[in-house]
Structure formats: C-alpha cells, structure tokens
Image (cartoon, rainbow, N blue to C red; front, side):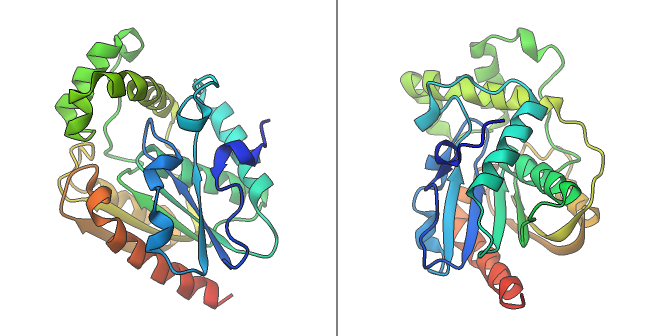
Length: 255
C-alpha cells in the first residue's frame, strides 16, 4: 500500500492556522492543477489539499492506475497518512473525483477510520451517469477522443491543441476504464452529503440522476444545480465553494 501523502496531495499539509481540511478530488484525467487557486475561494479557517493520482501532472512518471480496488486501497492509505487528530476534514470531488470521494467515505466508515465531516458530490451520480461502452478496451486513443468530443465531456479548447490532447487523453482514458470497474451496491454513508451539477451536463444521462444521492446519506443536505455542462464548475467554483464552506463551517462549529 502506497501511503506517501507527499505525492498524493498538494500541499502535503494545509496551513497550520487552518482548523479544517478540505480534500479536493479532481475530474477524470486531471490532478491538483484542476483546483489551482481554489484556496482563495475559501475562508482562512479551511485549508485545501488537492489530489493527484498516478500517471499525470507531477506524477507523470508513475504508471497510470488500472485496477479500481487497488487504487482505492492506495488512496485510502494516503489519506490516512496525511490526516491528523486535531482537525476535522471534508471531501469534495468532481466527476470521477466524486466517485472516489464517495467510495472512500464508505470504506472509511466501514473500517472505523476517521470519516469526513461533510461530503461534496459534483458532476457524478451512482445511477444515471454515462459509462464507457462495451468493448472500450479495444478503442484507440483517437476513437476515445472522438467519443469524448461528441459527449461534450471536456472543454472545447482541448480538442484544438494536439500536444495538450496527447498529454491529457491517456490519463482520461485510464480513469474512465477504472470507473467502468465500479459496481454500485447502493451503500449509504453516515456523514452529511451535498450534491452539485451543471443543469445541462450530458454525462448525466438520466435527468434525475443527481437525485440518487437522496438515498445515499443519512444526512442528505440537498442539491444545487447551476447553468452549464459537465464543467459548469469552472464558471461557478466561487458559488459552489461559498455554499459548501458555509455548510462545512456550520457542521464543524457544532463539534
């Protein structure tokens, strides 16, 4: 089990003055860079740490993950290695980051480990979310590129920069192949959970997909939709973090 939190999270530790941690888990193919500058959207009492999975950005030299359970095991160990006893923490994930945050919370609670004070789910749902098609293992990178472009799954500017596409696409494909391995068991978490999504997200193939979260937490706090597609979060990060941090501070103030 890889528990080297210095590789997994940026920064390795939040500022000492932050009394609450916020672990940010990015969308498919990305890493900590997806959340660059988000610390400025939050009060000083909340310190951010952003996740980078193997095979991308600062970890480009490492093999891309290929097994869902092995990845979850390693992430579980890395998270526990970075936590301390003094500060509560929250998890917020977008796309596959939301999937990882949810399953990580299920694992933490089942094992009796310190669980998050609040779970934020953005742009992914356990039911009604797009899945890679059967036979995806045989698709070439160009075929995957066309598939993702048709879905509107990534920013338009990505498709006009071949060098950037060659850099970004392999971890995107690896993450979607990881996601296909996930089998939903309708697990319910004890911690509070709030959900967010773009109102025109084409990856949410069922109109009420985000409503699946109403039955996944004993303390479901509701859903907020924003104008935009899958990457609505790029335009509405300040609004989402304002809502999320307000809820987080209220919860941790009661502790």
